[in-house]
Amino acid sequence: MSFVLSLLPGCPILRIGYPIEFLFHRVVGGICRISSPTDIGAQDATLTFLQQAQVKRSSRHLPRILGISGEGYRTVYLKLGIALEADLAIVAAVHEAIGDAAAIRVDANEAWTRFEADRVVPRLGALGVEFVEQPIDMHDLDGLAELRARTGVPIGANQSAWLPHQVAATIARRAADVIVTDPHQLGGLATFRDVAALCELHGIPLIKHAFGDLGVTTAATLHVLGSLPEPQLGHQTHLQILEHDLLAERLTFTAGCLQVPTAPGIGVEVDRDALRHYGEAFESIGEYEGYSPRDSERPTGSR
Ligand SMILES: [Mg+2]
Image (cartoon, rainbow, N blue to C red; front, side, top):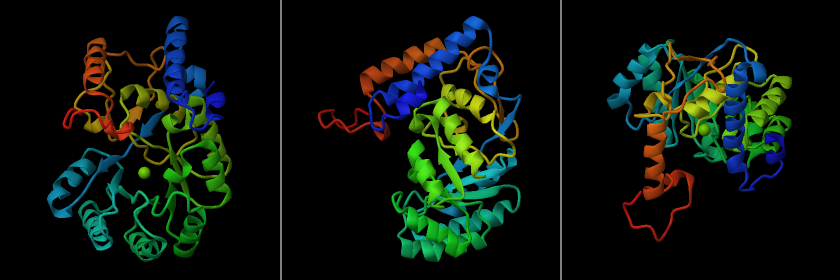
């Protein structure tokens, strides 16, 4: 089903394909009393996740970064793209603070021109970053390929590789060392597994991206991640920074890792009260603006 939906890029039905697939695993797994690991092929696996940090001024946030590494996370993820020298100062400060306790991954979200990337990426490489995610425009696959060839610094494709055909093109153009995408963007768990197989064939790591995932998404995706070969790089999630979730029992991290759930279905139970609460919030406030066009008729401050 997800494969069929993925053939319809831009089709609104893509937005319902993923929940339907979750529902399938949840209901059928529950009835048959089998878990998705059995269904999808996941092992009894533990997956590593990274800790994200949006750093504006390194000195003020360093204790928080140090706290993160102290929780056992092996990868720290920094959003860059503020200004070249400020970006470098942040990475240098974090590197000095955490040493080898965790890898430092940086994401520029297309902030730099080719000219800027040529100057900043080698300096980031000298600071030992794990890879630089989406340094330049998502459409500039030639630029990404030339950047990684020229600098020797590993490059991650994220916005360049949302959809299956984009992942294939990115790999074919040798534009990335790492693919970062997620089941929501791809259209479902099955397509995510297909893309994982494509990456595996080419020896390129696949990293689960997170778009503010709740526990249901993370639990479902764990089943696919648990079926992939080890070792894997740290995957993204937002569970560590959520005040609340929709799960009756939250997923818990141990030294920065989550285990593949083994209970029937996708292995989690939904908190019905929380679901009702956020359903009412959605009805009265609307969708988070990062995920929908701004409604010009909605009163200011109503989101
Ligand atoms: Mg990214």
